[in-house]
Image 1: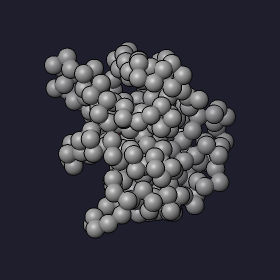
Image 2: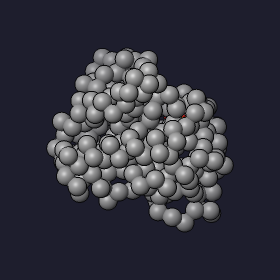
Image 3: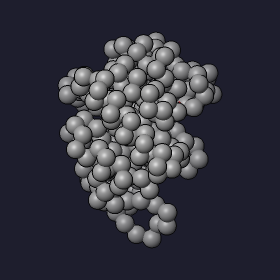
Image 4: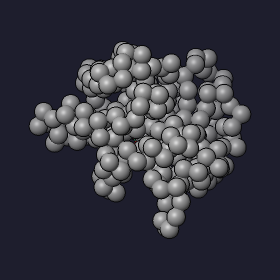
Length: 253
Ligand code: PEP
């Protein structure tokens, strides 16, 4: 079944104390102020996963995500983190293919496909990120880029495995820039993604898939984005670092 989701990607921000305080505040506000059925996902940096797990493990509809994982089971990969290491500290979700990793670590669609495979093999829910750069949009290539990222990154899965994914559409030009895609711009691409899924796996899988929007989501624009037919929530960067803002985004769901 399609879920409404607000996921906070903290990137390389916050110290241990700040991370602890942020989660405690959001969970408190979520309980006191929100009575819907949207799910919340926190994606802190690796050192805080275990600590945050203890804060959220008994909280209904609140989940813990890593921001990345390595595609191998284990081995001599200094500085990397494996799927089984993540699950061993209570992680349930993992962001795969964030544009910052595609850009700075040159992560290709083929590599991301193998990261999705290892995540699923360990029972982790991948949050697979796709999105076009400004140059690609201005050249009129947005939908071709999206099609390729879907085809090469996750369409090797069978329908049952694909059904476990969350997709996040994040136009690169809107991430961390303060510039948000308009609701119509975002909806156009979300509808296209859902049509690609329908063509590949059928109507049921497409209808059940949660497709999040990411790119300068804030309390002031969340409601109009989330009102669009094919936008099922947000992957939030900057605004997820402020408990009041992130809670208001959850409430917009
Ligand atoms: C992100 O990091 O995925 C993101 C969308 O960041 P921001 O909300 O800051 O644009």
